[in-house]
Length: 214
Image: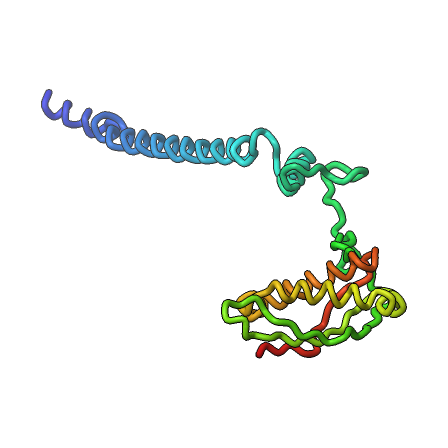
């Protein structure tokens, strides 16, 4: 009788009590742990994003939208050794002049004015060149460009001009005048000698109308 009574008592236990309820508790505990882990990961990601937004995206504590950052960008765009234009507002770029409206270019001015540009002829000259054989001759025809009418001075100083040019040419060798560079140098030398005679920077250029070496 006692065994039967025990069997009835075990059958009369309510569901979920005893050993049958243990797996359910473990399953519920696992769900809670998983939920907490997911919540922790989410909070960590949100915190990292907030930290990047507040601190890491700034450079030296200056955000890209702040006036200080704009001023820093303007300073970086200004070449070293140059200051920003006077009157320019901080954080604003200086206006760039349009094409054709920039600062005027500073170009070297010619040493001698060329207002008139008068071309006058000189008498042709034939001289012996300074060569070991002594058999080379140079025949030169010239015209000069002057900045004022000096035809009277050329006539008055004709003998002196011819003598100066003859002495200059007679001291040249064939090698001195055979190259284009040598001829250009000879033109400059003749212009300098003529300006010394005229007493002013009148001669601008010398043109060879004839240049024959025999």
